Length: 191
Image (cartoon, rainbow, N blue to C red; front, side):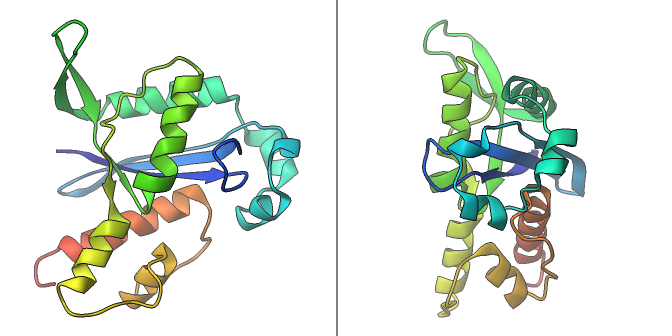
C-alpha cells in the first residue's frame, strides 16, 4: 500500500490564510517512489508577514514559479490518483471508488482541514481518505510506551532526537522528506 506524505505551507495559522506551497512524497515499503512540489499564487495582503518570513516566502521566486490554485489542485489530484489504494463505496451511487492514504506531521489538525477546505471551496473532489495518518500522534505514542517524553514534538525536534539532519525547515518538500525519513526510522526493524 502506498502512503503519500504531504505538507502545506500557509500564509498564517488561520483557516482563511492562503496555501502558499504544497509538497508530497509517495512511498511504499521500499521507499520513495515520486515527489511533488508546487508554489501557489496568492495575495500577500491576505497573509501574515511573519508567517511568510518563517515559510521562506520570496516574492521573486513566487513570481517565477508559482502557479494558480486551480492548476496546483489539478496537478496534485493527478499525482494522488497514481497512489489510490483505498477503496470506498459511494453513499450516493453505491459504487466503489479509490482514494489515496495521506500522512504527515500534525496533518490531522492543521494541514488536512486546510487541504479539504481548499478543494471544497473550489467544488472539487480531494482523492484522499479524509483520515490521514498523523506522525505527531505516532511519535507521541512511540515515546509514551517507552516511558519517555520529549520537550517538544515539533518535527524538527523529533528528527534531531533520532539524528536526522534538519535543513530548510518550513519548506514543504523538505518537511515532507523529514517526516518520511522519521517514520522509516521508527518503523524499521530493530527500533
